[in-house]
Amino acid sequence: MGGTSDVKLIVDGKRLDERTVDELRKIRIQTGIVPEADGSAFIEWGGNKIICGVYGPRECIPKHAANPYRAVIKCRYMMSPFASLEEHGRSGPSRRSTELSKVIREVFENVVLAKEFPNTQIELYMDVLQADGGTRTASITVAAVALANAGIPMKDMVSAVAVGKGGDELMVDLGKLEDNFGQSDVPLAFSAKDKKLLLVQMDGLLTRDEIAKILEMAEKSSEKINEIQTNALKDYYTKETEEEFKL
Ligand code: CDP
Image (cartoon, rainbow, N blue to C red):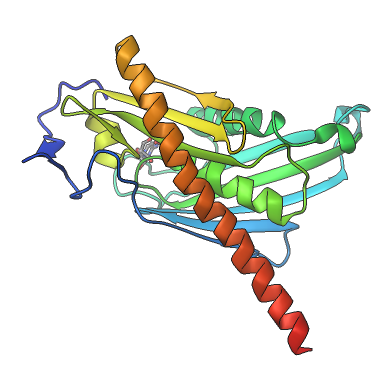
């Protein structure tokens, strides 16, 4: 990040993976894949592979941490040591995973109807098996599907994407090189229906006009992502219904 590197992110008007500036990478989501969890989902987003398991609402442990007015949301983002080739060589929590767990938790604290479940906890675990830029936004996207799969009531669905600037162009869904060597990276999360901004982070510098354009590009992308999330849930529940009919 910072735009001083020699890596050319736009060559002959195209991005390194041939995408146009407003094109998302391929996204595939499958839900209900971990039988032991109350809800789960797996996402492949470009080269990212992330699995999410949800438990709860269930008894809050330790008991003294329980809130008599609402469920406590616990969130753990983790990148496995084999998730990427270079930088990430160790397992266990890091400053980065602590930050990401916190910002993801704050997103869901704003949509989960936690007041319905006082004295309980809702746990969200996201494990990045393969990382390729945009793991926080892909984690939020897959976690929203896993929460829905767990039957946890939410005000709205959440879809997230990182939009930024590389090679002096604004572009959606930054890949790893665009993220690491671009001029700016803005991960954003939106609620699907009322388009409330639930996460805004920013690396690098942008003008006011660029920020306005980025918000517009991200909102359009979030609609496409929401469609993929909805279809993943529909696929799962249609399959279940078909199986029930077979019995
Ligand atoms: O993943 P996200 O873009 O949300 O977070 P980041 O901190 O901006 O990282 C960008 C990308 O760099 C990640 O998606 C990984 O591909 C890579 N990375 C890594 O491999 N190991 C790290 N410790 C941090 C980042």
